[in-house]
Length: 385
Image 1 (cartoon, rainbow, N blue to C red):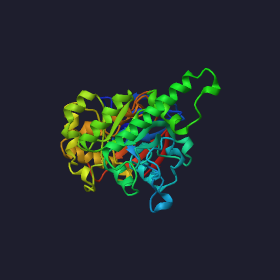
Image 2: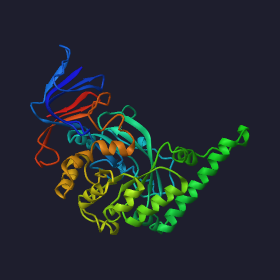
Image 3: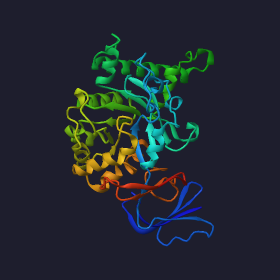
Image 4: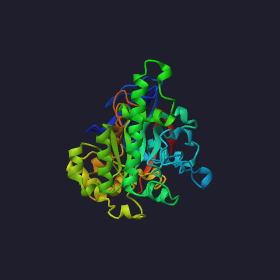
């Protein structure tokens, strides 16, 4: 049993507790409040007035898919031989022993939604994982959590270089549409075949898309430009599937439309240069504009584009651009948890949730020179400065 006491606790449920305590047992939060009495044999951490938050969450990254300090040998995020690869699973490529994991939890990031890149129209499944561990099977929060799809420049650029489809946005949409129609037909034949011998021949690609068609997982749509965001939404409606909007770089230009769609926006990576045409309207104003319009926002690093430990810096720069401080903190805690459907376990400091907790020297949203004091994942102290 572990007791944290004398902390400034940001529960992320519209409550800040001064001189608060958190009682942890078996990896879960048992009690949050003031004057909590713990058993005499409990380990005690005195926060000494420091700021305490839930562990940070990045709702869209590629942690462990592209390893640090290595080239092709550690590049496992894009299978650029086929634009349709739904059968690929991130957990078969993630290397949790890469140094980027240690840097992530030292920076307060305790959960990452990670998976394939955006080279393919359909890229494979993402997984939600904790950032501490050495065996990926023991780090999973949910797998699969989403099916990666991509619109805009990336699939065009990759397959144009190979002189094959898709070379246009039309082809990207058409390939997605054709694949989903095939998956629907496959599922119908499979479910309607009373005689097993009449069932369709096993197809791993089609099998991987069944959870999408059944709304068990959403498609995770890489879309920067406004028209690509609308294409992704149009296709999701056509097939009645769930969707998350990832990157949403031009979201500030269509904020009122996104409010009507009632979809959250996973915004970023915003730090860095405008490396391609579809990023020409990139700005740290986007989170503020979307938030004020009524769109639920999460902020992403798209790691390794921005190293994952700088997630709070990205939220801080959004705050500097006008996003309310508490909203900036929500954008890397409870909001991403709600957008990806994991808010029953992570994203806030509440009874029964995973004990993913970070204690800071300073304020990670407002102070550039803040330092992580202690990181706790699943009730275990994994980092202590």
